[in-house]
Length: 77
Image (tube, rainbow, N blue to C red; front, side):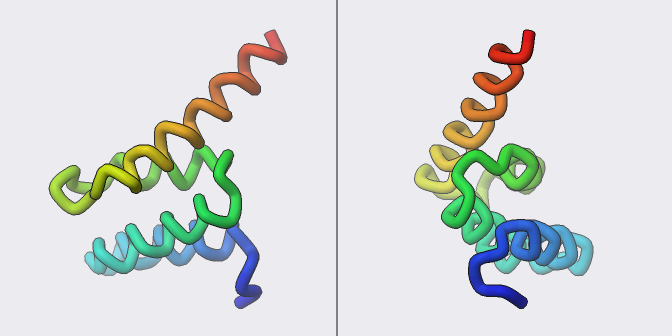
């Protein structure tokens, strides 16, 4: 796996979630957002996880990514 390939980490997070490895899924999604802060799909994947497993920093990363996504939508309208 390419170490700086955000899509691969997002897919890895999806795979970990399906296996019930939620902590590893969160780590993979966080890596996705570290590489690509505007990756809204990864943020949406995180917020679908049990809230008790998420720390404030992770939630802030999600908010930022989804905010980027919303601003892109507004520019296209």
